[in-house]
Length: 494
Image (cartoon, rainbow, N blue to C red):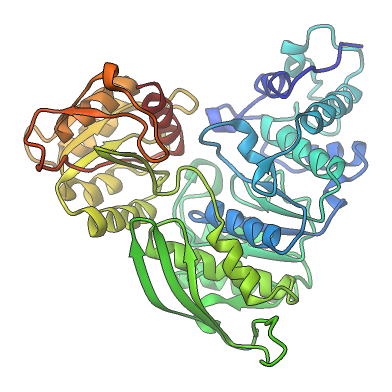
């Protein structure tokens, strides 16, 4: 038997050697039976606490974070599972607003490795090559994937931490996603767009069918606004599963939306699902007013409405003041996050045409047209559609590589933007660190490491070449969470 892991870093390093669909690697089969085998060997840790399951094409990470924030504010020990990460891989597996304790990751990692080895006909001698030793002729099929194992790691962490509730985001799709071993209190599905078409299908209907796979018998579905094609799929699925369909446009009214640099304010009224109140002099209320989320964007009010409706359905005892305070305490990296004040630099993981459109709408409404766009996305994204959306709103566009985690084609991205943008407007800078520096040069500033300072909202200072009263152009870094992560790393080193 191998020595035990000594740190969470060793656990995640071990996991990185398995097939990882995030990196473009593919298992022999996209299936769920391997995951069912793993959880059975683990003693079904996915049943350690009640859960809420979240799927969708965009906004699911924000909804997951909001659910966890509200439940944490209500006093629950909440295990939260979401992806991808921006700063640290432990962001994917959290308790409340923090990482699990180090010993939880290590203990769960050792348990996971023991379970994995139990699938082998012999003891593994060299842990980095463990993935290659699985026998694909076994009933469970080909070797477990990174996704399956990190999902099981999360369930093991949640069980060891004695959590009260789990909030779980799907990785890809839903029907065959490794998280779909849950039997949740309620399922939540955000807006559906064309994505991962090589795996999920190339129509809205086919993708919706995959997402609808998380709906469980006799368990409610909270559904975001959908196009007709998608809505029909979800209506059929919930009818077949005898599940209540709670369609947000039919029951929720969002009003008084105000988007500022520091967040989004709005009010919410929900039909037939009253808000509890801690004030004994008042009856249960249909409205929750003066809500605030520390993430700018009209879409975040819609995401919050989904999360609040799910909370009111699964945990009706939570009152509106707890909901309000929970949302106000939300903290999710990489969601329209300001990482520099001077020049102003915003990062946002907008990786679909619709999410990019909403991101740019928010950016331009706050900071004006004609800023700098730093863009990079994975090879499987619809870059032509995103180029059409973005090109007219920026003075300069820099295309770069969104990290090395997923396959990308910077040259194709550049061609897609250069084809429709004005001459000399689009630039290809393959290395992300150089692309960030070039964006800041275009914004009107130059680096001066000798005057570097660190503050809560200013990661570096820039030496101006213009008059003091003149403003730098604002910068938006977007297109991929992996690019967002790389930009953050670069800025922190400047």
